[in-house]
Length: 215
Image (cartoon, rainbow, N blue to C red; front, side, top):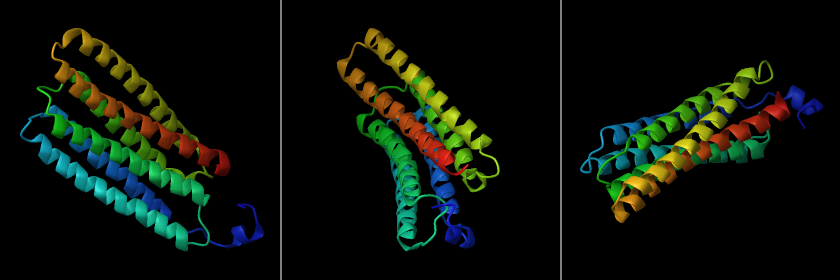
């Protein structure tokens, strides 16, 4: 109960904010590598990018597990334990999706990377930027929740743009690409990219829930 006498006297544990901020920054590192992988696409180098992103994703797993461990040993938390747990999990899920994009590129090795895939990769990065800004606002929500709300709205708008880009790309792909194998490869890669923006928007929804409870 956030308004209880005990809660008002007991200091909140600040350690969760740095952990969550670092989890959000992991998304930025992974998304930068994904953009580079698509922008400088080379079938011989795609596996190297996948391995780099996989290492970043493993660091994200470690940070998420650190959050879970801290939740088990901390008496007073800044927000509900469930909200912190869900936020850390969903931040990690975004990086997992980016890793999934890189894995598909490395394994499928399409002949080329259409511009729409680069556009989607950049939208994933845009989502990562909005997530990072929103997470950085968590420790000042009670003073001003306006910026956090704005970043959550940005995540919603980015997801809508990514959905439009994905649908347009698939429609054009089926009209222009003659090789069925290439269609399957590019469809799978673009679908995973669009799902990454879905996961990013879900981060925004969790943060909006926290805002409603605590701002």
